[in-house]
Structures are given as C-alpha cells and as structure tokens.
Image (cartoon, rainbow, N blue to C red; front, side, top):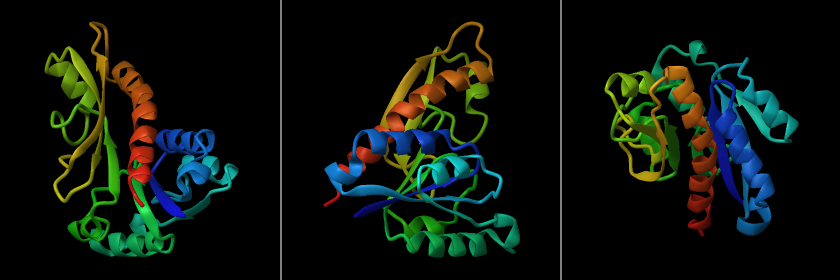
Length: 194
C-alpha cells in the first residue's frame, strides 16, 4: 500500500479535500494508496476531528515541547516514518522545515502555496498580490526543497483579482482552486509511483 501522510496546523480544508478525493476516486482500489495518517503540531487543530471521523489515524506533536526547530523536525520525521510514507503532504502545516527534514523526505514532500509561484513566496500572499496591482492570482502545488517555496511546480490554478477584492475575498477564491488542484497533484504523484 502507498501511504500518504498529511501534516496540518489548523482547519485542514485541503486535507479534507484530499481525503474526499481519495474516497470518491477509490485510490485504495485503483492505485493501492491510502491516507495513512494526519499529523498536527497543534492539539486543537480542527482538521484532526475530520480525519478521525473518516477513520484516519491522527497524531499530535507539539512543536512548543521541543528546545529547537531541529529537535522538533527530527521527532516529527520519526513519527511520520512509522507510517512508511510514499508521500508526505503539507496541507496548511505552518512550520518552516529544517534542511535535515526536507532532505530526509526528498522527492516525496509536497506543499501547496497560495500564489502563482515564483511570485510571492512566504506569507501574506493575497495582500501582496493586491498591492502589486496583479490582475491574476492563484495557487501552486510544488515539491518541497530546502529553499522556501521554490521546488518544482506540479500544478497551478489562476483566479482573477477583482477591483473590489481584499485579502480575504481573494483568499477564499484561491482556496476553492486549491481544493481542486491539490488532490489532483497528489493522485498524479501516486499514480506514477510503482
């Protein structure tokens, strides 16, 4: 079985979109793939409840319990490795990962970013797009490398920036596209793994 481990920090709407796509598309039957676990760095992450309700193993590893980012990432890698992941999916996991962690999962670590990369890496992407006068914004699924938000691009979706948009309205429009392209990127990755 090809195991997918999803990391979240909050509501987990992208995780939920991937779980629903896996159920509706019968990824287990078609591709021998399953969502093996959802792991959060926050015990109150609302997405954990959704995962539990869908029969997915959940774990919490509080980053605040560790002396350093490196210590947390090493412990997180050990938890993830118990599930023997074919793919690790970052779905609103609000932690910058250390080079050691990224290297450990090289070639099997995927992220979604709420901009049309390479534009607007980092935070506050929607406000920055509006302030720059962009006519279009969007989202990007990419493989994770040691450099923030610059890994190989797998999928992108474009939305218009409307004259009366603010960061919240633009974010909501982009999020609907995230829920479409992220499951597609995950299943395409899984299909190509033998």
